[in-house]
Length: 132
Image (tube, rainbow, N blue to C red; front, side, top):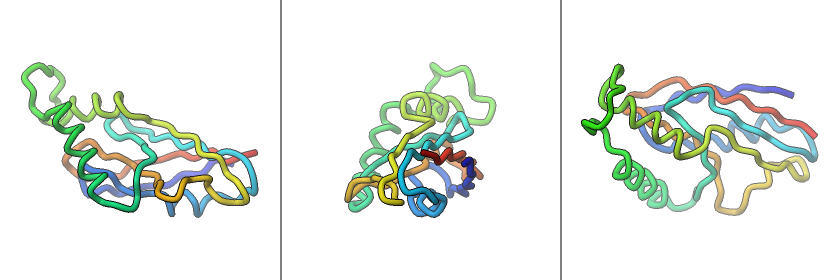
């Protein structure tokens, strides 16, 4: 079964989508594969209990790939354009999560996040394949 979820981001940062994805799971056992259809956003499984973990990850990646670096040529949509592409390349555009007993087999402190790498908010599409 193929499903889609749409995520309206508020701008750069980690946006939890665990509940949206879990609501689409209608099988007892199998695999849920997620794919984000954009080149400046990514998907990660990350800590969902302490918000400081998300903040630290965001600050670390922003320090690693700064906006407006004169090294970048691709800046058609602004100084965060190329950094958004690099960040998506360094992280993941797809994830696979087992489904056990009708639920995503995430650990106690794990959540699924869409990581928006652009400063402005955007509507992002995530395609899910859920099957045995």
